Length: 280
Image (cartoon, rainbow, N blue to C red; front, side, top):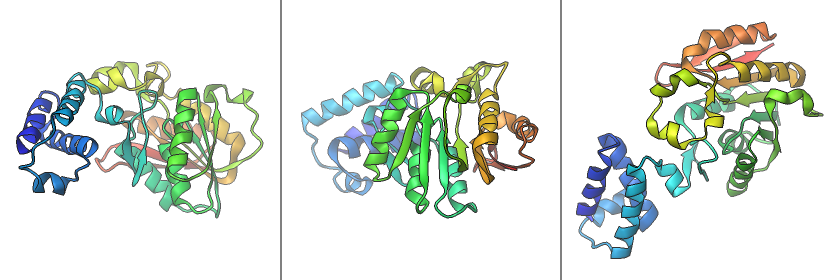
């Protein structure tokens, strides 16, 4: 087994760094053989059946071609939960976990009404439903495929969310009969001109609809969601966003322009401006 493990890491080294190659190798062994990290070490002299080696080689070839391991295994871990993912939704990321953690730990009313705009896999909405007692969580997305995946992830994680296919840029056409205590969104925010700064496998594999905005209107989703929030956020409610790290001050200014004078800009674990919370 040790020789196979070393072979995997070596083959992955053409695309990934040493640490990521090792982590992916352990994920492959867990998926194909059902072995934990400890078991991989304890069973290092074990012989692997040819059929399993073939399966591992197929996974390796897809990885070398640029397909993310999360799409190959159809799962991603997020905030202590496991989510089904495929190429119709973004792969959940650490900075989004930080946003979720902020909301969970922040002051909020009991049994809050929460809306997640652009839910994708449902990682935000499902995690909030799982961790905030009696929360009533709604989730919007323009993609029918994303809505289906979010529903599946809610079921898999034993929570209830209310999903709806919505183009938030056209929110005036959407009848909404409630107000929300929390509105949260991780909308598209990568400018087209920033594509060269993004990892190749992200640009080639993940849905552009959820990633990119025009260079001329990089804050269009923030503007439209803030306008929606003016109508549908409770008087003491809070509006949370994940943001483009290069547009922190611009996002803060926009929130103030749209009637949210109290805006907190927060850095992520890497010291980058990645989150805001706006209130009236």
